Length: 165
Image 1 (cartoon, rainbow, N blue to C red):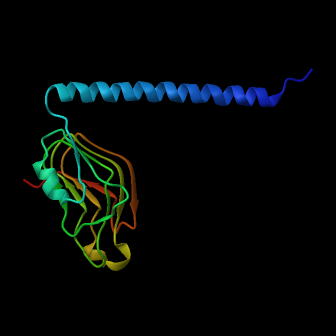
Image 2: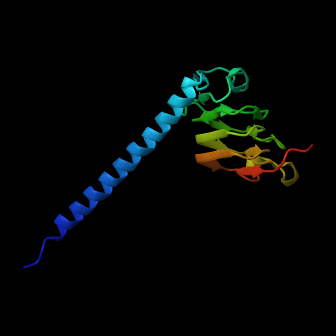
Image 3: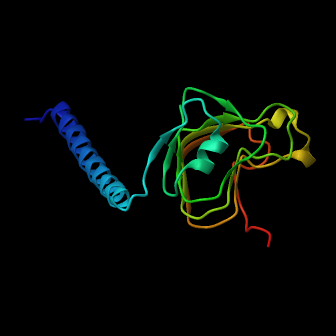
């Protein structure tokens, strides 16, 4: 008597789903615990961009804040947005204007910066080789760049190099 393959397939899919849910719950719990500990210390704050100037919002944000951008609104960045304090930048959707060379979208000059859930678009087709720049420049260590998309970058998606002293 042959056992139905469909039953095994459904059981396998169910098991994978249950494991994924358990891991997701576990990660969410760790993230919530971390946020709660930081919030108890008075440091974590969610700040929504809501059409304001990104550089001004980052400069005004307390350290360890989470700056949340609207993923559906693409920003055109003509001068690099510089991050000089530990924080998380989430959901940035940004592009460089055509023909703008030697310019990155983001520059990270602080440790403990996370850039996540982003989409960055360069201008590779409109910039000469000698004027190309990475979309993100990071001048420090202890950073995270995760769940992002780089498109049409004229040089690198991310460049990591020490700050000139």
